[in-house]
Image (tube, rainbow, N blue to C red; front, side):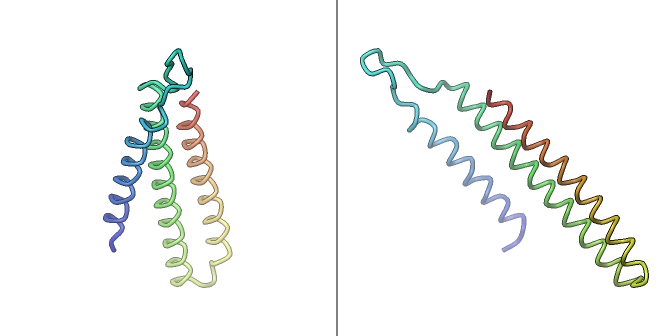
Length: 112
């Protein structure tokens, strides 16, 4: 299965879960008063947070994969520079991972 198909199936499944599971949990919680527990705005916030987190993780994974593949290719071409390449690869991967973490947290902080 190609990466594009896997990503599109994951996005469709995630959207389906977020869109169709939200009304099931939005039942009245007030008993006789009939108050709704969640509003439509809460559902849209959840959808936006999920999409933001998912896209951030996909982008971070692609970035770290590109860094790793380039580093391995560089080490294969110049084995004597593998120590320097490994150090630079780890620093770059940590920076990408940090930016991804901030993006995911930013998406989830919108739920407040």
